[in-house]
Image 1 (cartoon, helix red, strand yellow):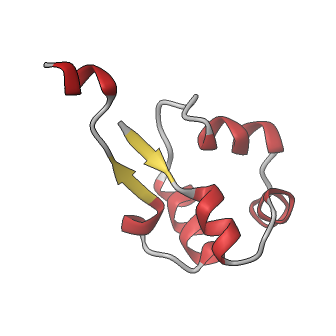
Image 2 (tube, helix red, strand yellow):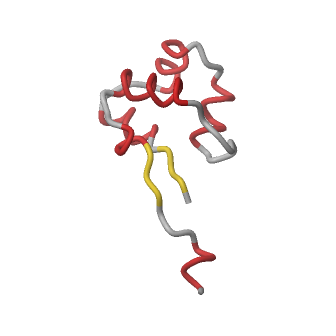
Length: 73
């Protein structure tokens, strides 16, 4: 499972989702879809902007974990 660690990075930088939306010119609905894993793709443009604004690397922004289904196999 691919995880986008936006909430953790916002806390680390003492920023809000509202701040991030305003700086990325993104709606809160779209940001929440990314945070909650309801999107199937994300553009390099957004990854770059997230990293710039949240002062992180792509490796800190995106992590991959095994999902529960794969753990049972």
